[in-house]
Image (tube, rainbow, N blue to C red):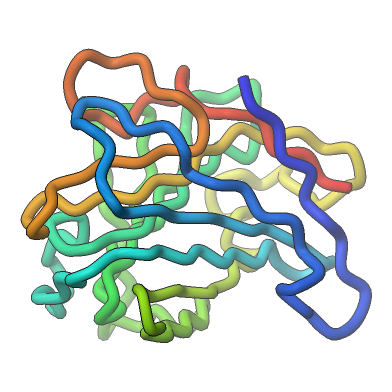
Length: 201
């Protein structure tokens, strides 16, 4: 199981100073010329996420509230903040900012979370197209975690389980990438048993 130490920030957030992990595991399909990386950091108020993808061409078709961003070029972060629970939050974005936000224990009980009037402002997503792909940054506020995990807190040494994913069901090159290796025979990211460990510095 892979482990990632989440750096604590005290002032200005400089992503260049935050360690990155590569999504090097390529299950189910032959590796292609697509790559992705992820970074995390935190302060007293939120967990901050940055994910970057190198891919061409990018597919970005979906924009609707109930659309499935995983069918486009998609970057995903699954996190189980309380390691003694099976529940996890999954956040999936395409380059248009189309969001799938859910809470689940696996493929058999996927619950999509939708805020009134498609108000996803609390995540504060920022998407940038680059010369060779795209990237996204967003935040997961502490108060959001506590809606579902009331005992959760940002404490040094706290261990969580998580995985980062890159996929594209309808892209020119269908692909699946993961940070911590997956063990299912067919495409399935919704497996907490395949999560790695992330630790607050």
